[in-house]
Length: 174
Image 1 (cartoon, rainbow, N blue to C red):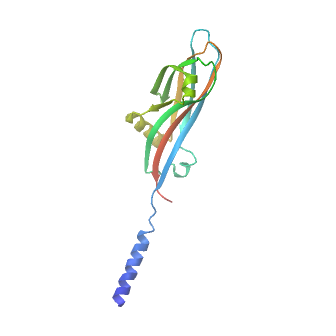
Image 2: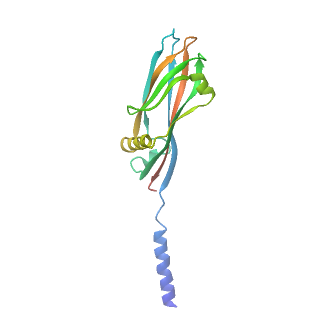
Image 3: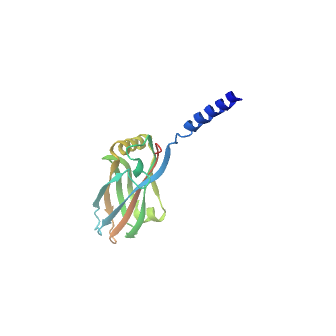
């Protein structure tokens, strides 16, 4: 009987120690950046626009785990026009760059239609997703540049573009 109690006690202690190990924290979040593009009315000749900014890995979900992440995956990158005012027939030729590499282009895009239709421009190439992952993990951010030319002969045009990088990561529980 003493041996049974002793063995049960040992098993209980061993199980207690193995249950102390905490599971990794799972992080699923979206990194976002907005660009506001203002274009004065044109007269038959397109005018250039450009905006750029650093999109950091740090947000409310990732901040406690920066520098501690075990894994990081970029699930998707997309952008869309989320606001529009001005020339309803205004068009753009736009290019989205991440760290000076072309990620996406549109030719003769009607901005109002893209906004009204909630058109989402998706970057799906696995190489680009992996490059972005490496930049976010190693440099904690990626530089985004949104550039192109616009033609809006009937009125000024102002629109807002939103880029979203959807990520998942694991970090050790603290």
